[in-house]
Image 1: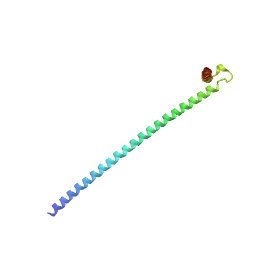
Image 2 (image 1 turned 45 degrees about the vertical axis):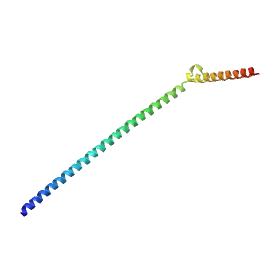
Image 3 (image 1 turned 135 degrees about the vertical axis):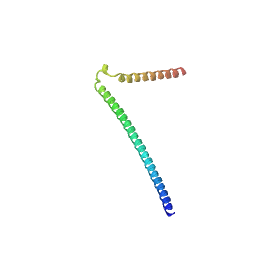
Image 4 (image 1 turned 60 degrees about the vertical axis):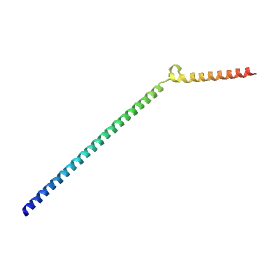
Length: 118
């Protein structure tokens, strides 16, 4: 009878140990899976950050090249020769003349209105 009781206890202990081992194995597997997911996420975030950084550097280089090209083009303009001035230099005087003409027209209308009132 004692032997049966001991055998039953041993069997119960074996089952308990096997269940504990299975639970530890499952926990370790879940932990490993979670670590892989964290690692994968971190790698993806680093990759995205690197892509954004590369794009920003490319935009910066492009803007710098544009500024350099514009500066070189301005450098080659002969300021003493009106034929060599870029078109943008001609726009300001033309716009200024247009404003002057409009102002003159307003003045003459105001003068005409004042004169006709008397």
